Image 1 (cartoon, rainbow, N blue to C red):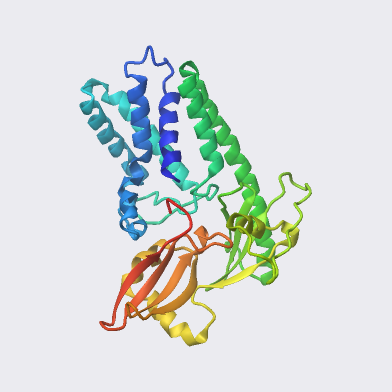
Image 2: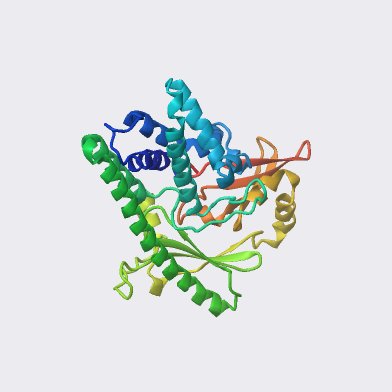
Length: 362
């Protein structure tokens, strides 16, 4: 999730865990909220250098701060540091509870995204995910902002606002789970038509609407992808499909193009994507690039890999094969996480590069 959502969730956790009220709590409300907000963003601290290092997202270092088994240790360290800094070391147990709960909220939110968590780290690197939330979910952020605003404007309502926020988020997640089942059912019908075995259907949330889903049917080295716009109510009338723009139509605004790509279930369109592309003339280059040792970080990170394109740069004398993870793709936009395995023609060495994407914090 984005750092603003994580910080607000941590601050609201601190307010929700203040049953006695700020006037009777041994720890000031400001310190409690500060602890919650800092702990809420702490697991992503090792990713803050991604602004200068575009490959940071592929590092295994975030697994250490996102490990549930290590969360108590991080909570204890944060609590002691904050208590020492405010010269109230005797209050570290209360701060440790807040920090632990805020880190826990961070981990739960990340578990509910497509990237998921390495739950058993450091004993296993296997990742688990229940993809209900897009990493940039404006509706979840809106609920958190409203609750935080109420807490600021009416301090006496702060705890009730925080508890209400989490209740609203729980209802939102239940609705997302229902819509995800509908999206999976669309994929299962397509898989049945294609004769694909079970377990090959996936549904990933999209950022602009909770009714927008990416449905992916995985084959051996290929995927069928559909961008679906679900009806608000089961059996309700589906929105009318928008006609695809013709070659003579003026280019649409990027946002309108993205929104228009999501189609109702009755008019869904399936797009074919391949892990190594369909051009047999480039197959050797693409597979060689994919198997290079320098590209191992992306192979470890990516789950549903799609070959994007190959290109040659005369300025740098490099030939690059570009891949992306379909989990983070959006219609009508360049992929958010696109990486290239590049061979330097002079030295005959390989390196990994990242292309800029359309979304922040990814």
